Length: 237
Image (cartoon, rainbow, N blue to C red; front, side, top):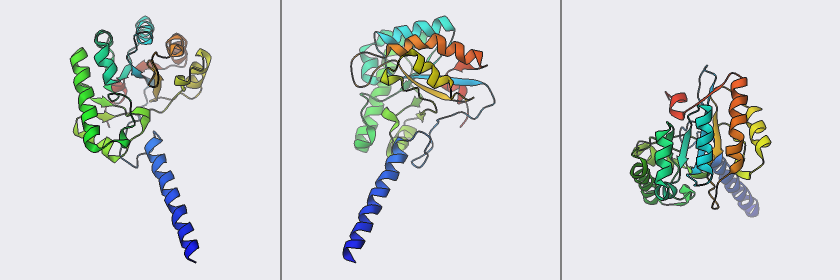
């Protein structure tokens, strides 16, 4: 009987751990607090968002493509990289894009103390503002992983947390066709699309993402969609 109780307790612990992991990693799960993953709208619009930059090679290509297409997007930037490349930060803002907080160095924030989480986000806010004169109002946790502390601290700092509803997994460098097809095959009004100009785990960005943008935006327009900034699609909570 004792062994049975131990086995049941162990199984319960594993089940709870799995549920908590699901809540921490799944963009659409709100167990730890509300996050924006999709806009409720009748407008045929989507938000293109770019993570992990700015990257000196790929970010200019992304910006060139967006300028040629007449599209404004949202850039969730890493604080350390914003500090290192202020010229790119200034260009992002000057060309009408939204800049947002993606942490200082792309670490999994729930593994840190509350004080360290706060220091990370504040340091990133300061770095972004120093680089381009804009203090972000939006935040995306690295890997999308969060816990109640991460969301609460972000709110206390005046940051609204946004994740995503569509990911073509461009961070895997699957090729232009895959990035475009994986996005267009599932797109719906109000979607927030996760793309990457930088790479969290290595130097250099994701050229497939830049190369895919003309086809992706044309495909969206052929389907009657417009691509806009995050703060334009998520006007209300």
